[in-house]
Image (tube, rainbow, N blue to C red; front, side, top):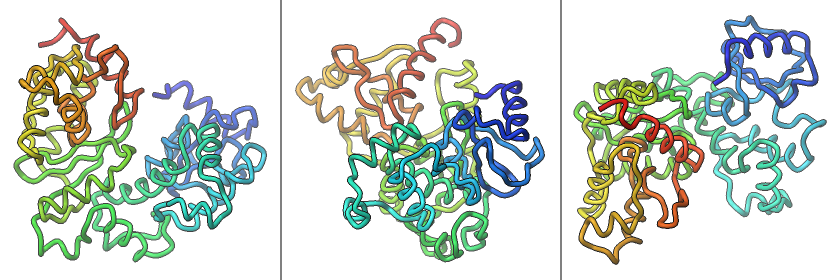
Length: 352
């Protein structure tokens, strides 16, 4: 979280075009939807129209697109020609899903691209492209607008391009929603980054971090399994989990009560039930869970079910670690997993 004092310092650096602040912060301009680096030559926005970020990933996932004038992700003094080429390729086709053959067509080694992007931006190229695509689509979701009315300011050259991207992510355009069950999706801001929540009028169907790897496929599977269209909006379960998440991060809540609609095999659902029994502030191993379920040899199946969980934080798969004490994997990223475990340990004995 950037302090108010730092925001004032960043804004003054923006006005003065201080080169020593290059890479220290990025500024999103709410009135234009773009984000810039510290020395952008464009006309300076008012302070109240600025949103400051420490990384490019944060700006992208907040739905801002790179400024075409200062090109914050391909500044020639700071990045290689390879990175500039790939950033420009994403800007030309932001809704594209990149595959190995796409790198080959540009005569780019995918491993080199991954390493250079990781070094420069703190994320891989594929993660950058996904963040760009999801940020653009989720901008409409966060605003609660119908996709059919998407504006060119979202960063797409055509409204049809945006509708196509939305359909790939959500599974069906709103104009076709009358032929399906209807779920609603909303964007939730949290201290650990934005999350996406999907629900019907009775229960929550999904809660995930927006930058989780494979989120688009996860949403597609949900749409297919429920035979639903997923459209922007909010319902009582979404409002409920938003309220509970705020209390959780503030340290005043340990047990979630928002109703969940669990979609999985009987074994998966049993694993998820056991996950919810792990006390806040404690951890278990996959083997521990398997033994508790009376299936001590099924620890690998338990791990797979753990990874298939569609409710980040509230079905606490982050509380499962390796037998040797290592954190193991986590779809939301290991830094988030570490933070969640430490946050919950800090609450032990403070609230019930």
